[in-house]
Figure 1: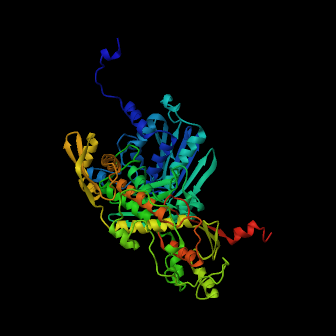
Figure 2: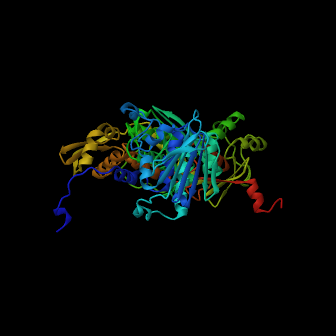
Figure 3: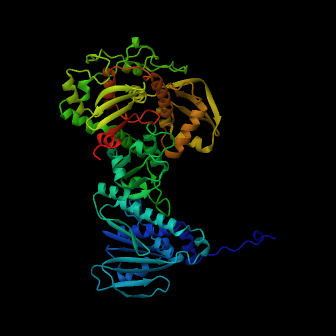
Amino acid sequence: MTAAAFPRPIRELPDELISQIAAGEVVERPASVVRELVDNALDAGARQITVRLLAGGVRSIVVEDDGCGIPMEQLPLALKRHATSKIANLVDLEAVATMGFRGEALAAIASVAELAIASRTADAAHASRLDARSGELQPAARATGTSVEVRELFFATPARRKFLKTDATELAHCLDAVRRHALARPGVGFTVWHEGKLVEQWRAATPEQRIADVLGEDFIAQSRPVAARIGPLQVSGRVGLPDAARARADQQYAYVNGRFVRDRLIAHGARSAYEDVLHGQRQPSYVLFIDIDPQRVDVNVHPTKIEVRFRDGREVHQAVRHAIESALAASRAPALAEAAAAGGGPEALAPSLPLPAERGPLRAPLPATGWQAPAPVQAALGLQELAVLYAQEPPPRWAPPAASNATSFAGPSAAASADDSHSWPLGRALAQLGGAYVLAENRHGLVIVDMHAAHERIVYERLKAAQDGSALAAQPLLIPATFAATPTEVATAEAQADALAALGLDIAPLSPGVLAVRSRPAALPDADPVALARAVLSELGEVEASRVVQRARDELLATMACHGAVRANRQLTIPEMNALLRDMERTERADQCNHGRPTWRQLSLKELDALFLRGR
């Protein structure tokens, strides 16, 4: 007969077993211990934190700080479960600003390892050391601050120790835990020793220098600063350029009020900002700091405090997305400002790229989608027919080349144009190569432009700008589309009715388990209303924001832009090439095409000299 036939009586668990159960949530591996102890050191006001490890932290972890210290009489209390100095009531909990607050880390660690604390306050005659196992309290020697020593992790629970990885793997996790703290606290110095050898050291520095010290100078060179205040949120940090995207999401750091978090909403907002500039499944890199009123975020969600819950997730999602989009779009602003300060900006030097109809067909016919360009799109591009996607400009202000020599440059005078071109980020056009590339010269060397990819981005951004100026109109369905919905989908449809209406969707309950789609976005007449509704509801339920409709619309505009862009083997004149370069300098996100491929590359004079072994 099974044990279930003899139910056991309900009993109160002993404190040690309770702490070991809690340790299962708080202490996953040595890195978890390092994270908790560094949290405590930061809350104590430490300016220098030293971490010493043996065997990847399995045999020994020692965290030393120069914080305020713990009074001798409070040391035994520090090891009790749910004993803390950081909160005293519910009001404190709802506005907690410290790294730790639950008061269970030290007790949980002491239940699965040998733990000792040595601490001294500024007014104490000497330090005091407490052994958690024996409870013995005795004098010790150390300066003001606290040292916590953890030895033989999981010795009391051997089964859990079997799940640990190699020492090298555990060391890597410990270093990553310290790295996350170091990025958020540039004013604090961090040192990590392993087996008596120094493995990492980050001295107190400015925020910018700390990011460079932790992630490397290459990250600084291949990223852009973020600084935006959007509503009640402040978003700052650095975001990697699309060209620097990685195969894995291993360089994504997000902080809320200085606390490292893994939040799907923030990750989704960041990813959506890269939607049309990343190629394939590449992952962006970023360091984001989100400052928000503590009362608008709940950090008491998970024992490890690595997850949070926002009062208004949509505003956080939009703030993150808009801040990153602005940072990526404005990457050429400094260069353009320098050009304007030099007396000749791109706007005054070249018209938009003209594509005269008499030069022959430039594009393949558009697929029959049944979608008509909205009036604002046609008006913005000067269109009367959908087949013509690029505005017809007045004749260029450039004189035609004197000869077919590709190196000639049309302009007011050859000398003046050569001089003025140094103020243009993408320089002056020299020639066309292989019917697909434009070669240009700027102050740094040679610029190579993929003319189709570049023109595709220009057309795409114009289409988006025109479409964004009009609301997402709803198209009522003659016969509402109904589908069997899950309780989550029904709840989301009711709670997010305003958000759905803004997307051109009218989704309402028809019965307890059935939803009816009464309208869909007018811009997506061929979309399956049920599939579209399910996709939007899924995203809204997961991250409280949805870009399913905008994404589908942008994919359609991207297709239009691809067909409307200048094609390969189209012969451009020098003025047309220069006009394309000036349009690129004016267009946001012009470094990548709609599919995330690069539109241009720079080959410096130094690199050219190296190719020909000059100076050797």
